[in-house]
Length: 365
Image 1 (spheres, rainbow, N blue to C red):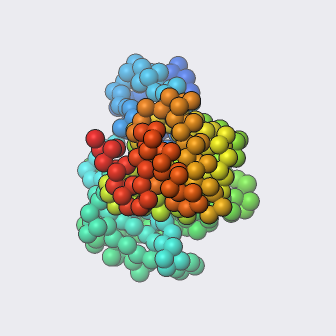
Image 2 (cartoon, helix red, strand yellow):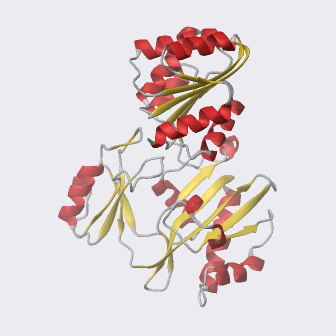
Image 3 (cartoon, rainbow, N blue to C red):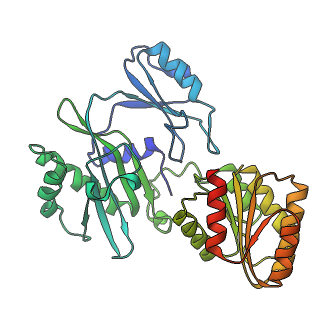
């Protein structure tokens, strides 16, 4: 379960992690008349708020009310903004990153610290990221010197020690999958503040935490619609809508797309169905997500490929789909399936690599 930023920051404060002064509003009239330089931040369970216009700046009460009015009601990738967090604007000297996640290959929590913050941690050069495995019930004293030195925070060792210890206690106590501060701001005043906060709790451990604020379900409207129809559907950031049969095949399709520079925008798992109506319904969801390209990857076992192909063609016609479509279809009646698709203007390929390369090229064009 993901927490909203203001909820995560409440936990930060409970564990002694400094955060900016701020408050939550759902009405522009609730803005404090004495407010100065401030940041207005949409509270939605998705990243990329800044790029979407969900984070804005103001320098007095009048401009803050105007920005609150602009942000409330925005639709940020399927999430409607119902509340905004208003915070003091920090005087930034440096922006860093610190977080704890699970290293599944080692089966241990992993603390990451980066000399560059405020950007997607995946895009930071590897040599700028430090990594330290943490052992449950162990102290963090042994790594504080290394982290302080790695981040060049000379003279701030005590602050680093308190921050690392608090972050680790929070991660452990609340059964977290991820606790992240990005950016971790070093202020010109010489202290460190968590400018942003992200916390994901292990869903299987929620029963141990009735104190946590479960008030918004972590689903977009389209994901809720898909769930109600019994279809596995997840919205992502890219432009390629992926339809596949089986969770493993869907994941490997997304991985292969990334090899060719493509980026999945939505993925949808058909499971083992070859029911034409179900295929059409799946495409209806996909069309409402507005991808640039649709990539279908069907590896038939009990699924008959020609039946799926008829469903794809029916969906294309009935939904007036104008996006380019690529299909990798393999299994029972695959030759007939490819014939049906090609005759209806759909790229039909046997090989997953070629299909992913084609979809990536179409997304980039």
